[in-house]
Length: 424
Image (cartoon, rainbow, N blue to C red):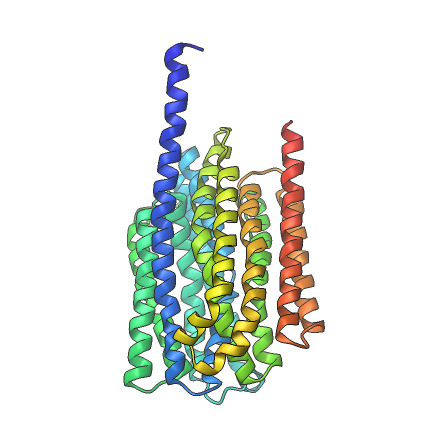
């Protein structure tokens, strides 16, 4: 190797590392700002009746439980590969296929929900169907938005991805505040804010990605694409279930007051993920791009260390400062119960955050995707079964969550070691 070439390689690595930290830093700022704006909606719990806040939490959990993470990661992967291989026209066809597919599934599911509307409302202790109707439209837009965000992420266009996240939060907070404080609405009014935030985010991200999805599509190997996206769908669906399913169960099995306490603790604990998710979000398209070009990358270790540091410090701070934060944000009556379960909740988020890094690293590479995805999805099904069996107290629910998150981390660590052994 020539001296000039030897000098170029370190400089290139330094430049790439600087770009990674710059992009991660911006996305972290945008993610936290957008998250804080969306989190600020929960301040409105002080102005609505008991039970309405847990209804808002349950309706919001339905949206959170949607496969938005898998959809975004699929589009991120396909966009990064298309840019690496010069197949942008095929990408346009993939986007249209996913758009039509998700819209058709939403239409069928909406009909089923409307037919079963009465038992659903009774099961969640809701009197008005208005919030449920709004949630149906939120579900549709929530299925569309990750496709635009996935294209932005795959293009590594983190500037507009971040702005879209913040616009989502601004729209949600502004409209929800008007609905609750001015019009006297409850959970349904807060869900209207969620809807309008999504509208604003989709308009912005859709405009920024219009060159991709408006391009004339070329035929693509749909069987090959399906083989690529199915593992991502299974794995990230499993991850999302582990991240969100507990709120729906608590709303169904506990009193309105207990559910309100739990939702408040969960809102604060999931804020830890806003802090660390941007690291993996920046890492994933870079790894896909590198894998498509058979290039080596050492990003994973750096991201894992950063995620571990931030999540552990954040969980510790939240456990100490949690009672004060709950008293400031939520009703005073929430402090005693919510503060007692907050350490459990925050601790359960640490292995989930670490597993997310390993999962992104493994799914960015073609080796062993399907066995990993099956293991993660089966674990998620086992998690739902365990929650249905062991939910005598709120701490017991969180103990089940923590145990399953540790199992997810162990599964991802095992597959990571197998990947290293196969390269050795």
